[in-house]
Length: 401
Ligand code: C5P
Image (tube, rainbow, N blue to C red; front, top):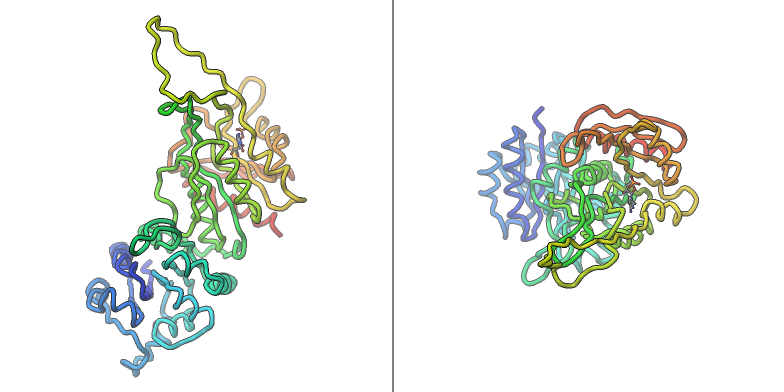
């Protein structure tokens, strides 16, 4: 299906990155109509947008008045994406102003509307901007969290436009027509595998790639949530619109999860924290000995973060989801082991992956069973990790209300 995209471009330096977005949509066979603001033309001229989109470009409402563009463009769109969205355009959209073609289009659109804000950290954090973002989200618009990184000039911080490839993915996810049933919710997801260092160069790690955690994050953004991912050693590109908190060890993951979940509505522990860590960290690289005797490494147990999060919550809020990689054995089946684990951990849902024969880790597809503390069981057939992610959010939403 050809998607009719209206790409609003407002006046930030990141507007040059919108050129790649136009390409991503058009090369996937979709149609893009670029609607720049007047000030954005200081950064990228109309000729660039006309050449890339193959469509005329108009900024104000008083050109080609006979075509009633200020109404028609919004009416005909399947998606309105504003990238970059400045503090100014967010403010105008939140207050329903209509002084150019883009803001008129925002008022007439009946399709999903997504904003990818980009600005300096101070402007993003300003109470006025945050109130406008909250207003837009409450109305069912998707407002992506900006990325953290290099800003204009010498500054770095939160406010960077997410990578165009990730905005593109987020936009396509929104068009999958899921309900925006996580609007107004804050969800926290742990992803990846922790590393426990023995010395400056060696660590105990595991095979978790972070793919399932990132798929959960993408799906939650598409359903309207504010998303924080505490990411342990994940090397994948961060999904657009997500606050990513990088960590290395289980202890760091633990601290950041406790901080991030203070106001969370749902928590998903998709990470693989190491169960054990070396009892001591040796400051210098451990050397081989001339007599060939290998060192003995003494391990101590790490705290179970999931159990701590369950213990820290008040009543049933937030909803807490654990993951379990299980194998069956002579004593019990995978599901029997998992039911016992669900009871031990005390969480609301446990996503069970059967990892016999190296299944699941680092792969794009997965299969799982989602067990509920209420005795429910949802079988998720083999498929993409995004499919399992939506099944998990369906089950979470059911328990939020
Ligand atoms: O007991 P097991 O490691 O199989 O439990 C897996 C679940 O517990 C996962 O959700 C994982 O994120 C969580 N976990 C944890 N803290 C640990 C180990 C695992 O929260 N130290």
